[in-house]
Image (cartoon, rainbow, N blue to C red; front, side):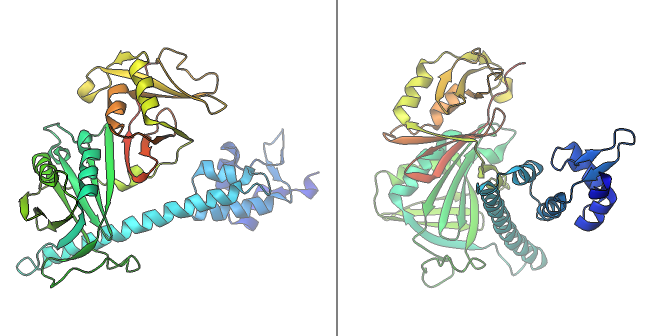
Length: 383
């Protein structure tokens, strides 16, 4: 029989994988040999496994996670599952490249400031956004602003200008809220007139950010009121200026680097559950909870359980209700009050819950505003 098989050394030579890598992938149940000599433990591979080994080598080269490599090699022919995994990985790589480009642009700017301290000032941009959408964005993120004096950077709202979008971000480390506002026009502060943002000019896209103290953010929200006109903002150089209807609010930004939020918002949920906001709110209010020391600084919080059974049915339950998941259902424990705060107070329509697993972040989105959502960290239940 062994005359029809490749030895592990031959497969390593022909596939580009090392012998140690083939041993690892056997142990990881990714590429098991066709035969293992019961006496010597030597691995032998079928002729058809060379194609899988060469594919594995290329998947490894592009950084595909081990679980996805296993899924690609195990995908049924013609199902499209392997191609979908490639599409998802390509999106992750493109997102990572966009983040790297943005960070390198900021790094170059910092290097310029470091090398030309007397002549270089931080970039400052003036831009306009719709007043109503900025007000809604502030309302959507305000609940997640941190209050820990040991984390002063989290006591503000990040205003992050990225080309044709203004993102508002707030987090207290236990939850994060993000909202997007379209930018109508943008220009450097010393430019004669603002121009329409050009999405095709990615490398030249304006970028500026400021951590706006929560008191200043609240003042901006009060200034907006029920205004419907365009709002002019200026960000950069350590200051924030907001003008609407002839009235102006300005102040200093917090002098701290805000945590990089972008990797945290790229979730890969196992389940997407659509349901009316009022229905979820009523279920959370009426469901039994358990008090567990899982809040900020170990404070007790009311924990409830979100469950999805094998047929995709969603329910809210008490944490004691079979939280071990032995029946194969997904169970995610959450701080009940945090989840209630993340639900839009005036949302009459559908919500989208994204659940990834018992220890993966969960997201709450509104169906009509996909760029505005909240992320909550789950609560670990006692064993």
